[in-house]
Amino acid sequence: MNQKYSLMLRNLNPVVVIIGINVLIFVAVNLSYQLGSDALLDFLALYSSPYFIQRPWGVITSVFTHYGLFHLLANMFTLYFFGNFMLRITGVRNFILLYLAGGLAGSLFFVLLAPDYHSAVGASGAVFALGGALTVLVPQIKVYVFPIPAPLPLWVAVIGGFIILSFLTGVAWQAHLGGLLAGLAGGLIIKRQQGRLYY
Image (cartoon, rainbow, N blue to C red):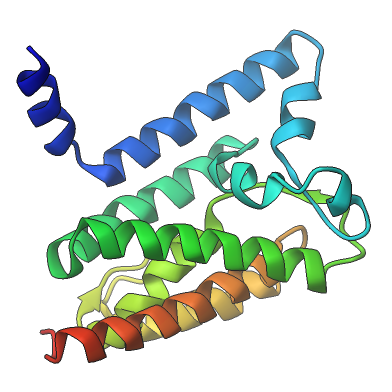
């Protein structure tokens, strides 16, 4: 019986697991709100300086937390495609390290560079880390970006997406920047370690 569950756990797709965690937390946060309380969202959110000192766990918990449905869907959709591609070319360990490092870097950049914002949630920093790593590993691979009808090189989609999102109000571009830089650095490390070019 133990071997059966052990095998099942080893065969779990970590991308699907992370998406599942995000969805469950999203449901819990919104259910809590419908019941008249923001306590769960406040507990999980990342707070900028100087409030960060009071709830430092937000550097991690905020990466798995979303409030708006569109925000959740956009991040999870991108995570699904970037994440599974990263799994195929670098393996589970590198994927998880990149995801967590990007989320952490995004959170720290937000804390340091966004004093005018009170709090933030979202997996965008971690997702941008995957995009940044893929920009180094497979820069020329073609991807479709809605609503553009023609495929774009992946590096154009990632960097262009970062620039466009940075001009939108209410978007924590600081977290995106931290995740992107962490991903670019991680991609360079992986490329050197594995000593080969990707298609």
